[in-house]
Amino acid sequence: MDAHYGKVMQARNQIQGTGSKLYFAYSGVLDRQAFEVWAEEHSYQFFTLPEGLVAEAKGVDLIFDFPSRWWGGRVAGLVAKEDSSVFGRLFEIPEKEWPIIQHKEGVVTGMSVETILSVSVDGQEFEATAFVTSPSRRSLDGPVSERYLEALIRGARASGLPEAYVASLPAKARGNP
Image (cartoon, rainbow, N blue to C red; front, side):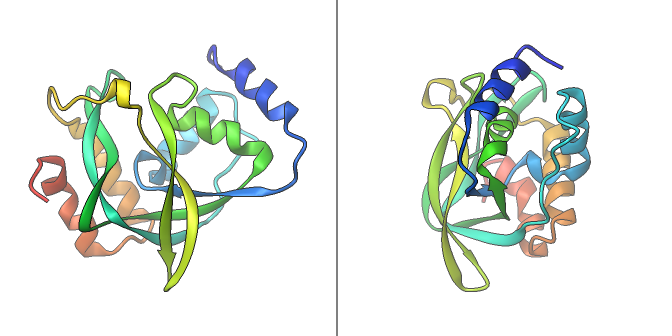
């Protein structure tokens, strides 16, 4: 358990709604094993990500713009880019569990902010929330985390993202999409 657990649980307990939010995950969250380890370390064993569906967000691309001490290098965010797209999974998250997703994605620590994207699943369009690097934390200084890139590729492959997209991830990490 970390210092943010109490804050997250308080936010969670204040939510009265029974609705849900659509969450587009495109980064390290897709590495299910890493997510489960994180959940265990932060005392969220009661929460599991649903299966989700493969989804595509058009008009954006990956940018490795967040220097992470934990990962030992820069990790991925999103940047607007015409004629480009990012694949991920679309999850329906109960409203009451949203603070856990915010914690995992770094909203609690000011690392990221929420953004709304249009994503496509089997030709059907949805509005979903994704997380991008907070403008005050963006930096292209330093190397991309190799350990993060390995987790990103492992998670993308395990999530059933298109193999051509998975194969493009190393080039995207090196700034050569």
